[in-house]
Image (tube, rainbow, N blue to C red; front, side, top):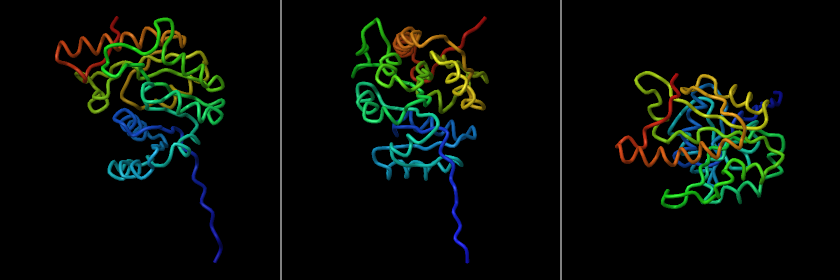
Amino acid sequence: MSNQIFFRPPPEIGVLGTGRMGVRLASMYAKAGRRVLLGSRDPARAGEIVHDLAIPGLSAGSYEEALEAEAVLPAVFIRDGLFELLDRYASRLDNKLLIDISNPFNEDYSDFITPWDTSGAEELQKRVPNAHVVGAFKNVFWAVFDDPLFVGTPSDVLVVGDNAPAKQQFFALSEDTPFRYLDAGALINARAIERMTMITGALGRSLGSYPRMNWRLLG
């Protein structure tokens, strides 16, 4: 009887965090046919979530295992330690696509914890200078992932970044997901997208549409 060695390819996307954004993004990408690993500080928690979702291509593990992926998507608030988390793993992110979904909200969502002359995406790139940061999903609120079409029409994800191949890698990974992806230019444009997201949230609350709302560029 011969010994057999089974090779499991690394995940295409490693999601760090099992909050409402992390779980929804991991599920979305797995449903689109990507190999996704949902990573957690508590791998058992990630395992329970993945077991309950039962989506082919979605697996569970630790942060360290998620960092083996071709692309890494941290789903952690800056205020909750995103920068410090990535500081610990900066060398593991060299030459990798780092998908930044963060908005630098304070605790009560009334303001940002970053100055006006920068953005969460730019600060992240400073922390991990050898990674290729692409900002995306900053304008998408969590409830949209549960019901992504508006009158049968997909809404927009604005994508920013300074590395063209990394952007193309992101667009390829995002094929067959229920959004329209727009190249919104350089990473510095995350400043406008993040600030507009705060305004959108305030408007949505006053109009009664929060949190299921998103943008669609018409013209």
